[in-house]
Length: 271
Image (cartoon, rainbow, N blue to C red):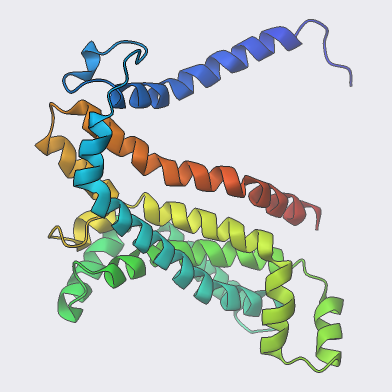
């Protein structure tokens, strides 16, 4: 079908306008972070004289919280993939009974509100001494990452030709060797996709951090920003600088991994 003549330029203009509208909050966040301390509404539309004092204040106050979020997010990724990859392989390649029921249970866990899980975990963590700990937050964030990773990895591993696995078995490789040396390398794109979204789930978590931490010993950046606003409502440049620094790891990760995510989605659609 031929595209209607004369519609390309208006569509481009409308697309650029919508994109600018959606990205304006991001621009204003960066702009406000480079303004002097004070009311951000009084700042200019462009930082002609950038002031980095907000970043210095934010780094001093929130640097530890950024490290905490990074440790928790990476730990959640490691735990989620470590459990989800073999589980997805078993559900995809082994003729197990009740596979449909297991998948249904995994989907149901995605429907449970996080506040319900957080309240249940608080009671259990209080008894186990896991409150205000890295391990506690990693386990809590993994309750979201593991089911999602299983669904993503299983859908990809089902498309792996059985001939490849059978050839490895004929060469003498056991099930564990086949999984480690054949299945995982073939599933690299799906693993990266699951890892990226699991990282983003943990990095942006607020509810578990608010419920399962009661001191400043272990405080993710999301909770740090929340409490930072109440404590420094006049230092909007520091608040916006904190949000910029909190956004950078997620943006960089998505930019670097977008090729793998797109490839995994395309492979799944084709196969």
